[in-house]
Structures are given as C-alpha cells and as structure tokens.
Image 1 (cartoon, helix red, strand yellow):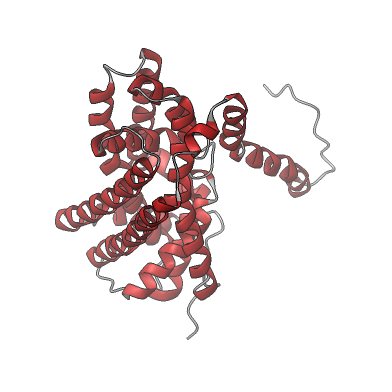
Image 2 (tube, helix red, strand yellow):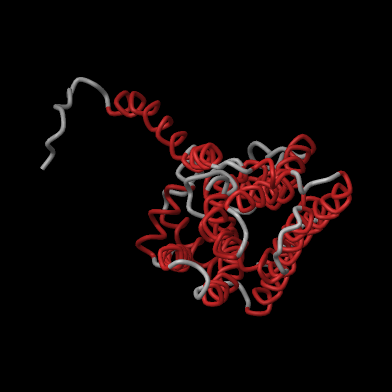
Length: 339
C-alpha cells in the first residue's frame, strides 16, 4: 500500500518525473563522491606522508615513465580483444577504429562509477558496422566479463595467499567483494534480470522495447565461440600483466619492500574492492585498502596511501589523458552511418 504524500492527479506523470530528475542527479553525484571523500578523510588522519614522499627523487622519473609506457601497451591488447569478439560474430573492425572507440568510451568510463561510459561503444558499432544495439550490448557484456573473471581468478588466489597476513575483517571484506563480482555478471544471462538490466541500459535505443530486441540480445550472448573467448582471455591476461608491472614501478620508485608477487596480490584485491560503484577509478577505496593492508605487510599506512595514489597517477591518469585525446579525434558518432 502506498503511504507517501498524495499525488495530484491533475499533474501529468512526465511532469512529476521531470521534477524528480534533479534529486536523482544529485544522488548519483553523491554516490560518485563517496570514494574521494574516503580519500580526503584518510589523508587528514595520516601524519607521516612527507617521510614517504621523500623516497621519491628525480632518478625515479625514468622508472615511472617506463611504467606509463607499459600501460599504453595494454590498450592495443584490449582493442585486439574487442576485435576478436566481433570476429566471432562475423564482423571485421579496423584496428585503428577499435582502439579509438575503446579509448574514447573508456575516457567517460574512467570518470563514472562502474565504467558505465563503456556503453558508448554501442554507438560506435551501430554507426560503423550498422550493428543493432541488442547485438552490441551482448558483445559488450562478454567483453566486460573478461575484465571481471580473469582478474577475479587472480583475486581468489591472492585472498588465499594473504589470508594468514591480513586481519580477519579485511579478509572477510575481500571475500565479500569477490562474491559480489562473481555473482553479478551471471545474472545477466538469466532472462528475468537481463531484461531489466538491458531495458535500463538501452531504454533510449530505437526499437528496443520490441520483443525482437531481447531475442537478439540473448542470441548474441550464445553465439560466442570457445576459441574466441580463449583468445580474448589471453589478451586480457596480458593487459593485466602490464598493469601489474606499472604498479611495480611505483613500488620500486617509493623504495617499498614489496616483491612483484606482493604487488600483483594487492592490486588484484584492490581491483575487486574498487569495482564497487561508489567511486571513480577506485579512488579512495584502493587507498583505504592499502592503508589497512600495508601495516600488516611490514610497512606503514602512509606508504600504502602514497602507493595507491601513485598507482592512480601512473595507471589511470594516463588512460584518462589518452581517452581525452581520442575523444577529440573520434568522438562517439551521432546517429546511424550516412548512406
């Protein structure tokens, strides 16, 4: 039974919807700021940041530059993965266009929780390949599953390896994050939940309301071939290794007593926790996790926060800059391809 304020029947539904839009917009902005707010609180409570930053010298500039270059090499690998999934559906996509569409959509994706900006790739496919939105959404779901389940396997191994070191609370939060990531994507293969998610994502797409749209979406999910999925997983793993190597350059520059395997484990778990859509590019959540985990690994909370910020600057900021440049070169096309 509805117990809220009375609804004036003389006010059209679209007017009531428009009136509530600013409130929903403010709510979305507030959710995005949770992660950065955590970071601000964390920085205010730390006391020895200067001592950690003193470990950085001009000699480390070359090392950090090498880390940024390693990250740039990861983007072509992800573009090749995108082309591989398209090839499974019989589509040939130019290498340059695949890379530019990935970077441009990723530019918005990095600035929105949950990387919802990746949905812009559907518009590139519709314009460049005349692919219907439901088909494109199915491909995007498979692509995002690669970015979920390949890192998730590393995160499971990391959670087991670090369990004797981390506190019980931190281990519990880690496993809850892994469970959240593992359970979410399969729901998209269940018709009842997939219909709601697809309708929400593509509610403005022409013709999607028709039953044909859902049929095409589920057909697209089923038409990926195992060999294409295996190749896509390999490209994902190679891109991950490059990102882990980037983070390791930050650890070496800060003179942190971390082996490469430690960095891989920490990045795997922080990636799981940072995937919760309350922040931008994991900012705040990642640093909080490092601040809690580093003292248990023989370092300081301050070192953990600086390491997290270094990862953000070396891994995520260059990707945002590249995406901004790509956006100027190849912004998301409007409408269908001109005939």
